[in-house]
Image 1: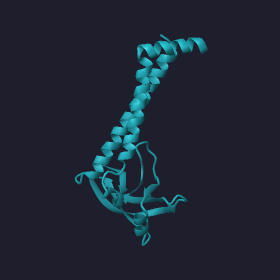
Image 2: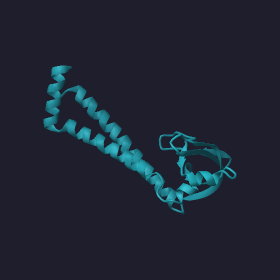
Image 3: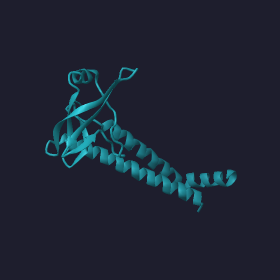
Image 4: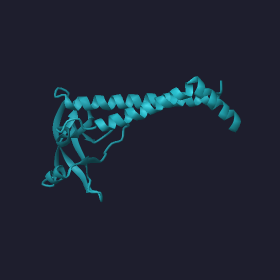
Length: 161
């Protein structure tokens, strides 16, 4: 067996597992913010508001829980993220730049503005995108290990590498 194919297969499997776990965690976080027993609402402040040239509106916000400051975050650990909001929500914030934030009781980093959360599933498109990428990586891994494809790939590697 060629070690290059084995290494590629292992790398694809590791990346696939990462995307599957990331997708599942994103769906779990989404569910948590929809289940009234698992979240609470607090007030926060808009720290930055911006209208892009393409007429999209973004905000950054922060809020405090038990003396600790939190902001928008994602599954990869990035914090203080910009959130895309509608023009109507942007205009409503302009009065006092205060914002109600829905957050998970056990993990305040899992949060979203209440005005977005009240509209239903918030980040499901992100979850689907992550799961689709994971599926494509699985397809790549399957093709590498398919006997006919693997033999063709081996011949190509032997010829050009």
